[in-house]
Length: 431
Image (cartoon, rainbow, N blue to C red):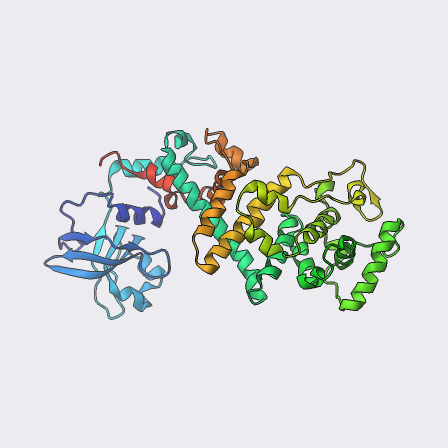
């Protein structure tokens, strides 16, 4: 039977094998007093175990491999951290293994001892060709287990996003206002133009734009100029105005461009998501919220109140153009769409709150992130539909973000044994 090392780790962790008359490969009786703590970092697999071998009780670590020879293949024989291993647990013992001082490490061979229904459950799970390996059993899994796994996947997803924000924060000496401003720009680029949007924000300090308060046209001129989206010779009056204003403020503030207009991606992007349209929207948001971080932190957490921060009126020009000198065939919306507000809540607000809670060590901000996502409508994309096919229907953005994390981090790489659902399906029928 073919299986990965993580399967044997689960077998040891949950003791899914016949423990009667356990013996080492050289015949000494074994009694497991303490399994040990599963170590997900470097070093032995299970720490602080207590194993009685023969008449002596040993305190130390347990290492798990498919074959004994993997000990040397993984270079453990030269690693002092593994000298504290008191038991080597393997599927097949194909050679004796030793510590760095040459002493023999006792070995437990599990071949023929693992419960048959556990082996069958594992083989049934991993032998399928479906993207969601557990799809056939999903409807039978208890809701509490599915919810628990969604929460775990969501937390891990928020941690990854908050790490991106923390990277911005650390680069500018923990300036939360400036970091929030840059984070907003990156999020407003969505997937396609996130990087050039971030670089645009980096090229203009937030405090520079704050000097112009409600003067949205000046902020637009600076942003469009820095984004290299003002033509060299604009044809319409608004374009000429923006170029004149930008030329003045570029000299005044000594602004340097770090983006070329060819870097903005338009292929496959709908007009309402074109960079120029998004930058015009950002200018209005900055005018309406002169202290962006304070606005985000101070609103009560109610989704309807949050939307007021982004309740902007997009200028008439940008309702009729998707770029300077580029009229739109259809009139664009005067307001941010509900879909945009949903994505901002998911990608901008929730990770920001999560990161803030970590920074000030107040877990309530993490809970606020979860509560906010539960107020937002469920997303609809190809990942969410993979689960709905198996009758697991998302109710809100909490569910959909959890499902996206679950698919990307567990289902797609087939890490079923790290997933609570997969672990539940592995369990034997016996108690």
